[in-house]
Image (cartoon, rainbow, N blue to C red; front, side, top):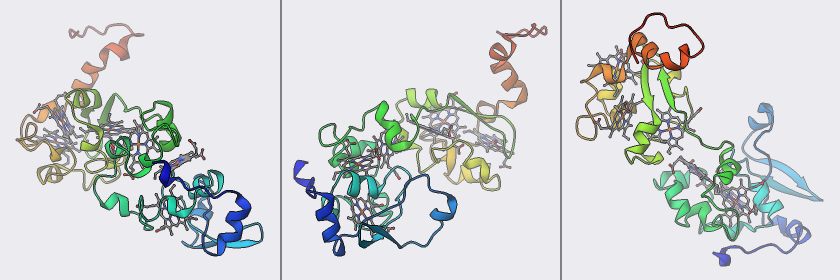
Length: 239
Ligand code: HEC
Ligand code: HEC
Ligand code: HEC
Ligand code: HEC
Ligand code: HEC
Ligand code: HEC
């Protein structure tokens, strides 16, 4: 892994060579106006104009690798990453399992050449959050109170990649932004929950409606304990 880490000795040298190397600018939290700018931008390091490449995703910044960490382009291109946005993703194994096994970002992020990928503090450095999966997700669009439990599903031995990002984005509310698509028909076609709830990997989506659709009453019942902790018991019998 060390062999991949050809450092440019000094920033001065880097700038001198910048006719060949093109560096790369823009941090994750730029204003929207800047992010919307055309793909190639010319930025200035010292006296030299270099091509700026936008951050690939908020978690990866060319600038922090090329300028701050002093890595040359060929420590990543083309052996670790193609110079094409989305190329790694298209390979189908761009996930934590690969990173942990020393591929892609994991070539360096192995706890030796750079911070590791096994966290928990490091999750935040790349993902911007601690990646804590929310306990219970309740979908209310297009219909009310469909329940999803991360814990139940993860405890069954499903790993994160079995749902993210293929069946679901790792962002609460993403599926509900398209209530016209997030439907039973889509589930029956193998999308969303239907990726598994197809009658062979898990109970079929056209059965046991009320296991997923717990209904408003079911929701109240399930969360009665929490909701009523500070309230009087309204004579409900459940426990
Ligand atoms: C630490 C690793 C790393 C280094 C060093 C690095 N890159 Fe990249 N580069 C990436 C990654 C990751 C991608 C995205 C690849 C993907 O999505 O599959 C990328 C993508 C690109 C792209 C495609 C951008 C686009 O929008 O399609 C260009 C151009 C590029 N890099 C140029 C450079 C240049 C020039 C240098 C040296 C100044 C450099 N990179 C150094 C990791 C690196
Ligand atoms: C060629 C080696 C190499 C590769 C490949 C690489 N990194 Fe890094 N990365 C480094 C080094 C070196 C540092 C700085 C030292 C450190 O923080 O441990 C760094 C730092 C970072 C930082 C902290 C930057 C900051 O501003 O604090 C993030 C985030 C990061 N890398 C994400 C990624 C992601 C995501 C990928 C894959 C897309 C990746 N890196 C691929 C070597 C690499
Ligand atoms: C060096 C940067 C880096 C660190 C550290 C890191 N990740 Fe990731 N993670 C990535 C990249 C890159 C991807 C693939 C992104 C993509 O598909 O666009 C990814 C994908 C994921 C995914 C979705 C696919 C999968 O593999 O399941 C999950 C979940 C995830 N990371 C969780 C975590 C957790 C939890 C931690 C901390 C233990 C962590 N990551 C630490 C870079 C990182
Ligand atoms: C069986 C499917 C499934 C598995 C397995 C799964 N998730 Fe999720 N996850 C979801 C769904 C569904 C959502 C909500 C997506 C939506 O609303 O569009 C979600 C959302 C998230 C969110 C977004 C939270 C927010 O507040 O925006 C995070 C973070 C997350 N998952 C992390 C993980 C991690 C880490 C793992 C592995 C330990 C994991 N998930 C495994 C289905 C799954
Ligand atoms: C990656 C596969 C996978 C995906 C995607 C998935 N599930 Fe499941 N789910 C399972 C498996 C496996 C079981 C347990 C086997 C069984 O009961 O048939 C299960 C069980 C359940 C249960 C009963 C156990 C419990 O946790 O209460 C519910 C409810 C449920 N899933 C809802 C959903 C909903 C809603 C979605 C979509 C938001 C979803 N699941 C997406 C695999 C998945
Ligand atoms: C595996 C979990 C699951 C099962 C089982 C399930 N559903 Fe759904 N259902 C969902 C999800 C997820 C949505 C979309 C989110 C929402 O509407 O809150 C949905 C949405 C719906 C909708 C509104 C969208 C549309 O397709 O018109 C109806 C109606 C519906 N379900 C009826 C049913 C009926 C009837 C059954 C039993 C034959 C059933 N569902 C079984 C998860 C499930």
